[in-house]
Image (cartoon, rainbow over all chains, first blue to last red):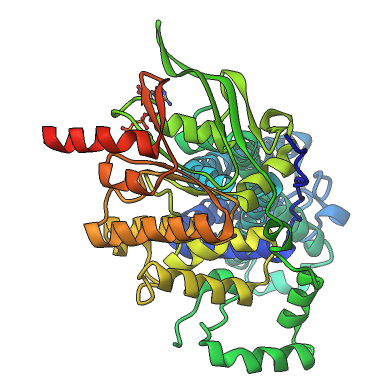
Amino acid sequence: MEKAEWQIGELRLRADLVWALAMSSLKVRMGRAFITGLTIATTTAFMMYLLTMPYADPNAPFHDGVAGMMGLRTDRDAGEVQGFLLMFVMALLVAAAGVLNTMLMNVSQRYREIGTIKCLGGLDRLILFSVLVEAALLGLVGAGLGVIIGLAISLLLSVADYGGAFWSHVGFGGLPLKVIFVLLIGMGLTTLGAAIPAQIAAKMPPIEAMRGEK
Amino acid sequence: MSERNPLLSGRPLRSPDARLDATAAVDSGHPDARAEQLVKGGVDWFADLDRQVDQTVMTSNVSKHYRMGEQIIKALDDVTVNIAAGEYISIMGPSGSGKTTLFNCIGGLTKPTSGNVFIDEIDVAQLDANELAWLRCRKIGYIFQSYNIIKVMTALENVTLPMLFAGLPGDEAQDRGVEILGRVGLGDRLLHTPKELSGGQQQRVAIARAFANRPAIILADEPTANLDLKTGEEIIMLMKEMNREQGVTVICSTHDHKMLAQSDRIIWMEDGRIKRIADRDEVKITVSQMSDHQ
Ligand SMILES: Nc1ncnc2c1ncn2[C@@H]1O[C@H](COP(=O)(O)OP(=O)(O)OP(=O)(O)O)[C@@H](O)[C@H]1O
Ligand SMILES: [Mg+2]
């Protein structure tokens, strides 16, 4: 038999397709995206509040520089600093558990779709990247909302505590870093929660992925 | 038409005479148009498949076993079969005889427990992830028994998706998608999602999608099971036409004896094994005998 001339070709990853798939996925699952976004927003709002609450000690880890938005009261002791740290770690854990769980569920329910995309010749990386882009966007929007809510609560309570005097004492220098910090945590958690099931599904043979078998 | 297709950058669906506008967009350096030019890069997309060579499908002692607790189910048991380029093969066999499993193995959609599948003398097991994706995308067109069309996408998006994977620019993919859907009689259902389509219409979306990238091999798993006689025959004729005119290799499972007339050879399966392989001429007698029984 004559040797076949035919050769295996190569498919290229298309950035435009990654983006289009991510957007179309967000669009068609608007309701689910909304709920996921709310989970991210509430947990990051709590973190943002902790970082900017009016009685955070100036010696606390997130004061001045990294933090330093408030600091009206300077009569806090080491115990309270520890208390603050503990609260923050707990907030982080709650956020991690909530967001990771939501994203895991979110992506795991799409095994059939992912398997089908693989059957049609979708690249593993296309699947992975589009899920990651989608998750990162969700994280950004959700955490953005969380930052606004957390900050609003913080400011409201401060004004309630200190009245108009508050505005003349407060400095906002540390705020941008805190905002970025919380946004990164939000995006990091969503992307991580999505990356794990997406990577597993993208690596599976398509038929097994469609059945959702591990 | 003013409705939009989100996968294709929300561009309105174009009728063929809207082509002039697209050219204008390229000239004026519209960002979308430029991106597409970059992607396109002046390649003739289907050139490599036009060169019809003697591709074959060959399985050598392919087995696929599933473990169900203590029990081992032999969905495929030592299947060896040789299919030449340009053949039209029908596969028959009772429910559970392993037809779908054989298709999945041939198509590189699942790994056989043992044995090898060769496509054009290339061992599918040796391919890396990208090459496998290429094979699934460009070389083989699948029509799944359970359709497997993506629920959250419209008929048109489902059909354009493999073309986009192949690297075709969005506009061209869309035009071609509209054309193929028209050919399977769904020209007026382009923007319907699967749940707005009947079973037979979904099946036709699956068929249109399988033809999208002009594959060299079509694996059709009971492609006409949910179609009325006339539509079913039209689909079979469409496959036969591609088989005859473009040398597309067609492997088609069916329960319908009327479909056998189109095939060069017929393979019977039972309990995961090949029971019999026969040329069409040999089968004529059997077919008439069978119709006597009915
Ligand atoms: N994922 C699986 N796990 C366990 N058993 C399986 C699995 N997939 C298929 N089987 C078994 O393998 C055998 C062959 O199945 P297959 O789907 O290939 O049959 P088929 O010939 O396509 O049947 P039908 O005509 O009903 O579509 C069946 O007995 C089935 O129960
Ligand atoms: Mg089957």
